[in-house]
Length: 405
Image 1 (cartoon, rainbow, N blue to C red):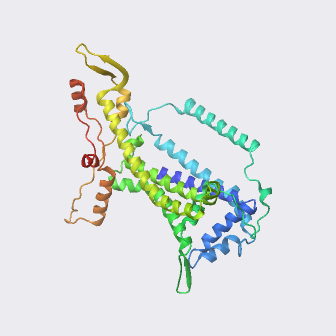
Image 2 (cartoon, rainbow, N blue to C red):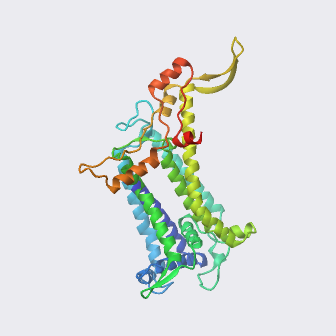
Image 3 (cartoon, helix red, strand yellow):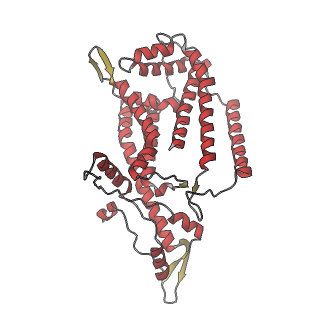
């Protein structure tokens, strides 16, 4: 969980480094980006104006923001990135690297190639590949033609620009939020058209940060793990990840609604409404499809373990029957397909006082969402039966499959 938080902080710092560098030229494009951030900050009730004034050194654009962004971009943010990279490497040295399941691999040992020379050679090769790509792009492509935009001036309005990944999803959230939700209360105006995207973005990042702790609480599994799960063997976790990526992707795509409407000759309002629907329905659809796909892949693995791998060779038996020849798996392949944890839904039980707490009920409900639909790994008994009778027992489906039948 701590290593996850370190990675999350590197992700946030990467966004901060990108935005501070993007804003430094003080051209029309970056100035408009800063203006959007200024508007989001000022949308915070009571303290927003003071925060904006302190950040920009007065009313936007102020006189201090460029110097502050310069210090952040070249010194503070890179220093924090290096610190968190050092923390990550230190934790790798202490906890060692993870590995996928295989014979002899457990949560208490480390199986793999040594750091020297294998991983050092790989890391060095990847470094030179990335360095070459960056040099190629910088030498042959124009990344940010600031001479086409000119210095920042609030009067021109740029068209055809698309924000980068680190700010695009916030821009898209602002575009998708209804703009007529301002409420005046006790002498203050609450612009919910800005507050909803701001709070929603912060909640999304917070959920990403604390997710491992949530799953550890739901499963009541506090052990240290070094054996990796294949995505298909953790269907709910994989589905939640796919839903989160879809949510982020829709927000990022929404930052280009004007270009989508222009190039596809569509109504801008129709594009916005479609994106609003996709923002809600897209993650749900991605969750369902991903989870069902993972369960289907698990069933396929189970069938391969019990039947063997299809060879594509058809053989005619002496009595006229045609069968396809299956070849058995080797021990390493079989180990990979059967070695995964089989969690079961938590049963609600009263505590020592004989009461069932709200937290226990919530944990049990989440546990059912996580593990009620699952495919158990092949047991040794099932494997012995399949090998003895040259066929596999019926593969049990999920509760939903049984209901659909």
